[in-house]
Image (cartoon, rainbow, N blue to C red):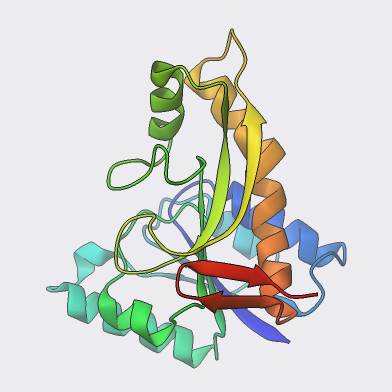
Length: 208
């Protein structure tokens, strides 16, 4: 059984999607051992409590340096024997110590088809605003492994979503979550927990 830490900053809808897939047996070889929130206002904390999952609040602002923050994150994950870290709407930047400690074991969900509409500042509603401004016909979501830059690690899964003529950033955000994010994040976690992801450079292969 793979011990999973889910890192959150807001409402926790992707956390909920993952919990649902674990509870209904879709994800069978992993369990969420701890939820780590970047702030104590995140509604995701309540979702964790409702499912009897331990929750820790570790705020970057509470530490004098990024190194101290990183060390605290590593220590919490080690205390729960974490083997996979999942970023589910997590907005704090993880440092080199943490990323190195969990190399190719940190999955992130991003609300666009990387390399479009991604990078520093592209979170929340912004990728959807930019997609509509650009006039793309297709957008979607991407699950990728984390490296030392924003949204730049090896891509695991992508799913496209049609952009409609009357879309607003909010309607597009909702449809991308429902049709793409909530589907491919649990799928990527399932594949990892079953040992079916192989990383070679930038390429991620899905093993049979």
